[in-house]
Image (cartoon, rainbow, N blue to C red):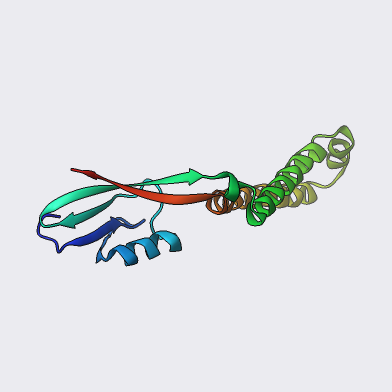
Length: 145
């Protein structure tokens, strides 16, 4: 880091150092989502290195924005769907019908159910990330190292 040119730097998700960037380029990368909370970022000027702490801050105005409310509704609908799928498969009537069905049909139904649950969990994870992004801002602050 000490032999680098003055500017802003950060390590991306793959651990590759990006920079030197101007202040405007660094802020644009932050807005585009290339710099996320917890990533290592720093600024170098005249041989001095300043650590940049990247944090997520939630604000009331963004939490109750139209996009955030939409993602919250989507998240609740997906979660309710998952709960209902699990509820239906645990009902005695469904268990009775599964016991009467052929083994091949039961395996096929089990595979479909497992795939649905896995895809629903990934969908919940993605929607939670979108909800966090839409209801918060990324703040960067410096400390002298």
